[in-house]
Amino acid sequence: MFKKVLLSCAVLTFLLYGNFVFAAEFSSDVVNSINGKETDKGVIYVKNNLRRVESGTGDASIVTIIDVNKKMGWVLIPGEKVYTKLDIGFLLNKDADKADKKVVGRESLDNYECTKIEYTYKNIAYGVLTQWYSDKLEFPIKIVHNMDGKEISKTEYKNIKMRKINDSLFSIPRGYKKK
Image (tube, rainbow, N blue to C red; front, side, top):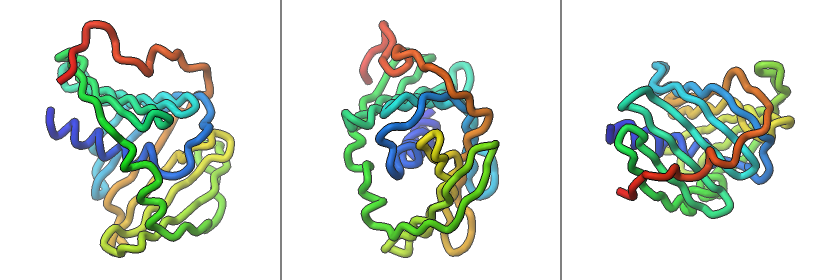
């Protein structure tokens, strides 16, 4: 379970990277890969500056809730009805400030026109991060991290559905205890 929590925290970095001030309301399947191998599937819900990612199944399920405005996050473990609070303020824009941003083109992914943006970290040990940023969603729908010319991680959003998202998805359910 701890490995799953660490992976969830890594996903936080991708969810927070870039300008997410006013994203559209939508839900989507999310697929994460590391070194070309799929590691995790889930669902993301996005509403303005709020994010919820659900991944895993049964006792191995995990929910991550992010409130960008409050610079806070919570990792919930539904099988145990516990949660952990995360201060995510250190993640917000820190990495972007330490990278050179370059628009490298436009592409269409899943019928969404995207601006393809490369972030080359000033510290070359961090590699290059590429986003396919949907103008309509105001959110990246594909993110690839390369180091030494090799893809080390990828996050893709598929089956995107623009719809109203219930506010209750972004709060800790009753009966959960802080861990």
